Image (tube, rainbow, N blue to C red; front, top):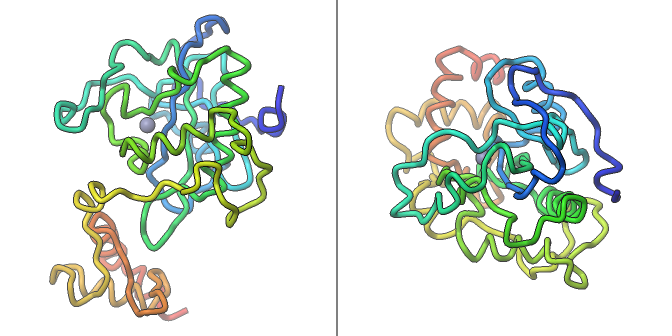
Length: 267
Ligand SMILES: [Zn+2]
């Protein structure tokens, strides 16, 4: 089997979140995703899909320390279905639409680790997800050409930080079986086989604006963000910058409206 597959814990998803059975020979593709969250854990994702009917699922959730299997390999997960994204002509996504499918793929979701508000996977999560993928490639005879991103199937921006061709190529080096590509895991901080961990690309940074200081933010977000800093919900780095993605400003305002930032500050 393999070190990663042996360590897998199981929390089956709600039966209404997945499809039926299939044979091992039907598994042709391995597909990578990100959860799009910050600081989430595999166990919590697995619990969510166990308890909530959302008619969606994935086989595995990987974080820094654990792997949870939510859908068995020989069950169909509902992870890459749905419409093709409208921006495919611009992004280059969706080239495998209708080719890689829920029926013939295994999906791995990478949990996100908060890094100054960026929805990134940690080095440990990336490496462990790659090692799990290598074991699945071996088990189901999936060649590296058929290891894909959700982005390749429907054009969804998933995983957003691997949409860039260079970042994806660097991730695939971890799957190649090249010497040094599979190192023991044990947390953050060691070099990757590819020599660089994928970073958000310039293109992503253009699409996802980041605010470093409250004064640069739109007026409507400033009060909530200031409260969030006082409440310890948002942290400043050594230079006093908060580094918040634009997409995270609105949730802060909602927290503030709910009175939660006041409560947190009073604690
Ligand atoms: Zn996805």
